[in-house]
Image (cartoon, rainbow, N blue to C red; front, side, top):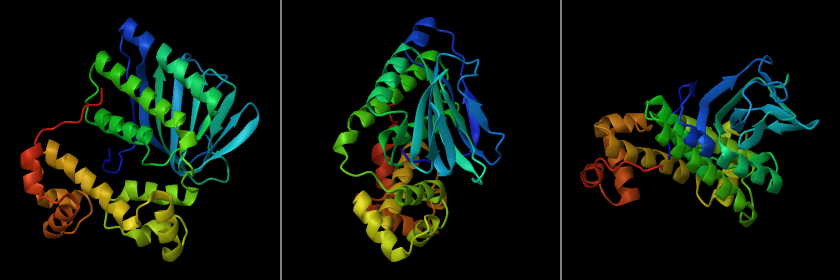
Length: 292
């Protein structure tokens, strides 16, 4: 699920149903950017024990030391750790910023799959921004911002589903013959964060420090889409969601997804979907996505 660029913030949940707490439950989630070396978490010295963290780098660079070994965390890198644990994650001195999304869960099911992923893959994961776990976490953040996570059963379902998405992705890593290069992940994350603005593939190439020619070739090779196709997919997928679930006019939706006017938006939407925004809304009005 694609969403509009984030509002940085964190969300905490303290549901009291003991059965759901044993199964899978959300503790906290958020989208954050750190720019000071005061950001420093020691896994051996935390009070919130029995929790399990997934943290995914959007941009910039962070670092994590696990059992004395240091791992840089740039765009597309995630870590999964248990609390407590022999690790420390922080903003290194040479980094200007570290932007990331995170989810902290708890429960027996989460613990089982976290441990299995760590045993099979390790605590450091490389995940393209289009992968299911990242898309699902983005949707959770949108739900949290809109106050749509309102009860223990709902939150437990979200926690369980994310855990399954992550485990399924990791179980199929060997089938992915090639991971996206870091430069391509960085460009894709830039597009995800800025597609509501008037950006182009030139901006994506600049964001990852490549020439347009080499960037276009490498992006197509890694993703099976051209940069403009990728950017268009982000925008049209968001437009579909807004047409289904909001009352925004086509003019408002065009502005929200980075198009200068409704006429151009209508033209692109019809080319991609073979229908007009109006007809799409008429057929799909109110078709909410089920994430349970």
